[in-house]
Length: 363
Ligand code: SF4
Image 1 (cartoon, rainbow, N blue to C red):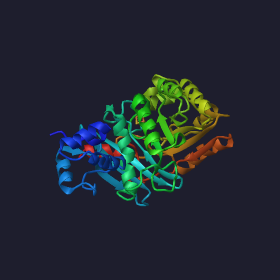
Image 2 (image 1 turned 60 degrees about the vertical axis):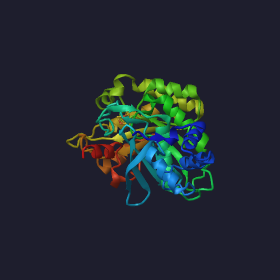
Image 3 (image 1 turned 120 degrees about the vertical axis):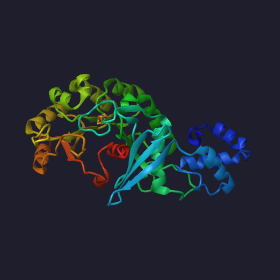
Image 4 (image 1 turned 135 degrees about the vertical axis):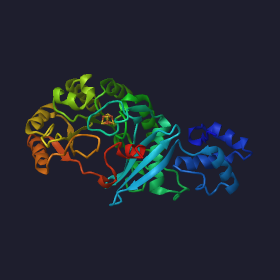
């Protein structure tokens, strides 16, 4: 029997569901409060009678995602979740406890159609777009991890307070290309801002360069952060590692990106994975590439995140040496570009996006 997902019901639908069970209406409000905290099951709902919790368990589930596996990094800062959707598709989300707050990286699609050559998420292709609720439920899973059933008398409303133990930042940078699912991603962000008080400036969308999607964000008008997964400084090289480059040139992508950041007076993030080929030769991490990248971002308000390649067994790349990575960064910095080498979080728990889902699928 398919179980009803209570999180997907409206307030009046939930009331009807509860009264159809022969229970008083106020139980709907109690359940709703538990749902808004990310309750993973009914057994945690201590103010609901045990008999009703057992009955609920037979016919309903709380969230539209179920935690299948949870991995904790050895330093305790990162928790990675493998989640199952109702049609058995699997996605991942990651909770990162940082000095500035608790950040959650969410997936926007099950799988990905974009085919980036260095990425594990696209190996099984695109399965489907996630709904608003499926994306939102990922931050509730993280929220439950942070707080569990503590503070149940207090609604979640972090208002960006990094130290109060709630989710304070969101990055839409997990599995999938967010701007291939723009309407649902926008719906999710509106809801995260409205329901959880997460400020626009604490939310980041990362795209591989879907220009019409960036235009849609400009039209939407919210001052969130934008990150461009660039990964190559010229179209010829980019086409070799990112099929999207056959559709939109770097010039077109950056033009849209600068229009977005100029509108909101925001700093653009550039994501740049440093890759070597299978023989260890530098691919996009040469001095020449660094100089070309300088020309793309010169005199612009941006931060370049340099990401040393993480091994994905199915992908034939190598990570450049520490020297090559620092040489690349130095060229950017000498030219006045903000550039940092991204500290890897949770390396010991399969940090490359999609790795966990694929390793589980292969079992
Ligand atoms: S890097 Fe992003 S856009 Fe490219 S295949 Fe992976 S998930 Fe898709």
